[in-house]
Length: 115
Image (tube, rainbow, N blue to C red; front, top):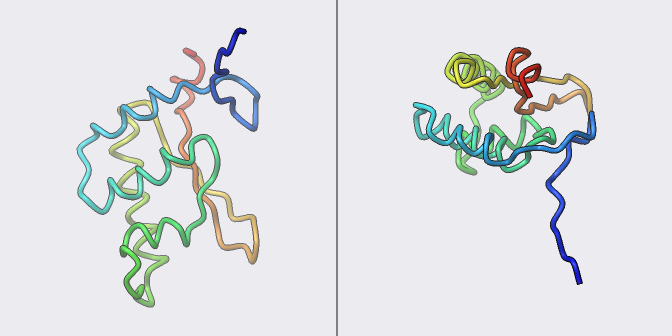
């Protein structure tokens, strides 16, 4: 009986996803808070993660301040700058329930074309 495990596929394009490449982002020079956000995105890759889930990762379940969304936006900008040299970025979608916003890891155009 052949029990080969199929690699995960991207829900958008249907191409195989190389989980090892994404997990290499663990070595990016990130603070504890930024790394916790990237870990959430890695665990969901290639799916989207809600802003609420990422804010929970930022604040560790503690009560979030009133400016939590602004803090998340600033943090995501900083993370994008760090991930870009590694061939990755984080996209944002304003859609979804109550227009709350979702984020996901994506390869930069140059990296995606090389694959």
